[in-house]
Length: 270
Image 1: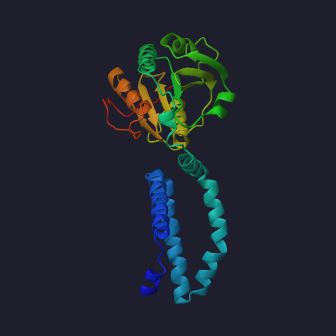
Image 2 (image 1 turned 90 degrees about the vertical axis):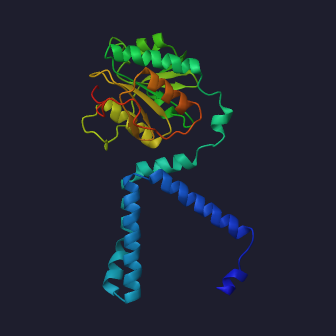
Image 3 (image 1 turned 30 degrees about the vertical axis):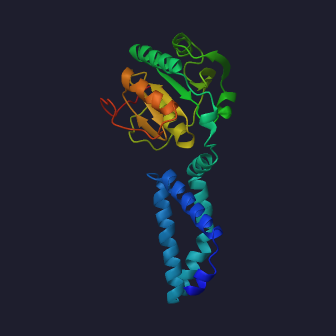
């Protein structure tokens, strides 16, 4: 004990401990509520079995766990590739990017709300992806390139049933529509099996990026927001405006719910 204290280096060891603690804390925040957390608990138990078997001289059990350890780690990497991508993306974000960017304007939020209400009123399905710090250039490449100021009329035109790109998503960045007709990854695990593909796509994209996705259900005309892999369903104009302002204005990005919710099932639509 005393020898360890004598070897303690100040401030290097203090900085080292603080950095490791912060990294562990951030990782736990990212995987909180996901299946990755349960798997980490399982790995911890497996390590406990390995140490116990080694200490008690249980050579067969020790050999069995040690032999399959590399295969287990490879299987985990394959199974949890989405969680790994999400974690790396979280660490790769620039904490000053939002301060340096021009940000979303109140006028853009007003146009989004007006368009969403109009689309919902006509039960016209739509999905709008609002980029934040993470750019979605791979999604933009497969869509129809655009460079137009966000407006209610433009969004109504894009998602009109007669439009050839109405089934895809519109990608929005810095107050402009950069692409439309884009296709998003679909989430396989959703809280409600009756959710349609638009809502599954919104959840799937926000599981891996920091984007905010606005979804209008074609079947029910409900307005929902997806952020951080969670869905905020059935929003009215006031709640939608409040949430968009909060999420795009640099405030806390974790969803707060319930918010004027009239029911969880916001599903349906293509």
